[in-house]
Length: 85
Image (cartoon, rainbow, N blue to C red; front, side):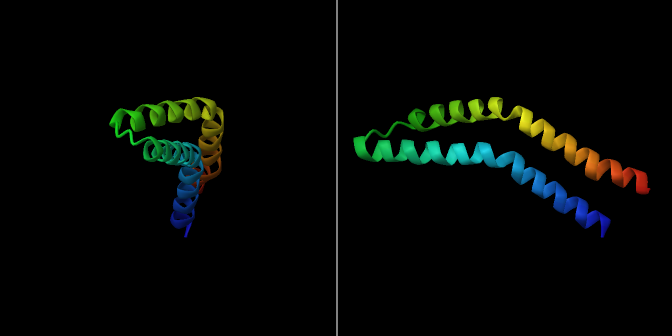
């Protein structure tokens, strides 16, 4: 039971960590796709570069949140598992 609880907490932490970056990638992708459909511009770099820049910006902004989430996960899950062994 302890193993499954730790795996559930790990998956929750992974979802919390990846949500901001994936949400921004989705929003920028939808915006660029709409822009390309309206202007009939079919350039591959037009979708890749703004998405990459937005994802890097969100990653830089949310680095504190991500590190706090990982540290809390480590303290609450991994260290408690180590003390039970």
